[in-house]
Length: 367
Image (cartoon, rainbow, N blue to C red; front, side, top):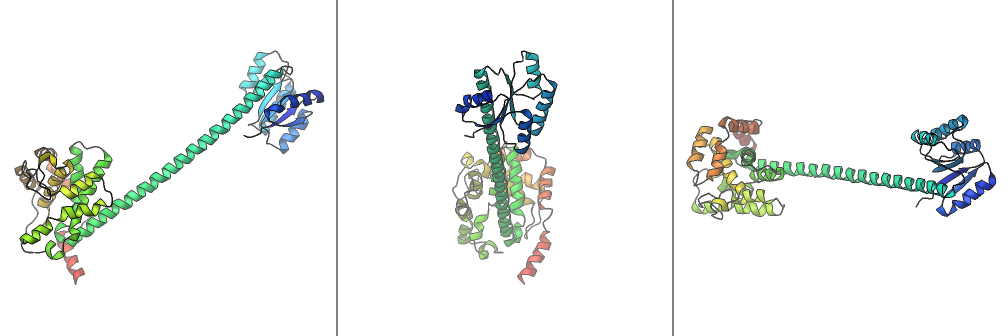
């Protein structure tokens, strides 16, 4: 606990000493001054007093000037005036002006003691509040810094995921931009489905980006084979959801992302893989993704066919409602105009090179 430094101004030496002894049990660091002029000189030299106790007549104009000077020297200094003045109006005026904190009768020792005690308690509270505010600022600063670092890490994380899937797309010219496009479709369709939680939507986007991550483990001889795959090769291709799930388990993606990676080839009628789940047993995010994935597949260029229209994609999705797709998700897809789906695709892929340009670049790199 801080020992407050107090300056007592009293012309009468006996009263000055008596007052110091009377206040000694408050554990104050008390200094004495015989006059206001000497006290002002001392205040000019050392502005480390907490409390000033002065015996003076506050109604005298000269004393009022001195009070103004003292407050100007040290605005934080607490002032207790000892005065026999019987004017409550004067006392209230001085307190309201902020010139004094207390006015007590010089002979009312309990009143003086109470005034000093109140000022000590007030200063303790001020210090506690300042310390509390500093702690709050520190907590706020630390929290802001932690949020900044978390956002930086999340940006790095998201960029890493996008770059990883771009690298996977680059492996197969047929799927150029597929991961990014289907991720955006899935996010939009999830929003239409009433999923508003930002974290959940972000996990759906990440899961859609990473849906084919398991293909990293599939040899190029199978993944890029121009002719029809054998039954054995198809078995290996069908392992990629489980392989992908195994890869991402260790990076602690939340369930929505993991569900898309593991279940994106399940069918509503139960004829899909790897688990053969049907209807509502398939997580909603995987059912949403199935429609988004088909939309992109039909409207994208393939070496064996040109891209088809969004109207054709809509027709095929409706035709496969209740077999490949959840009919409710199909209805949600149909609730958004096709021109809006086309706009989403354009905005997502506008900076990608065309299929032909990319094919030429890849050919030059391989040579």
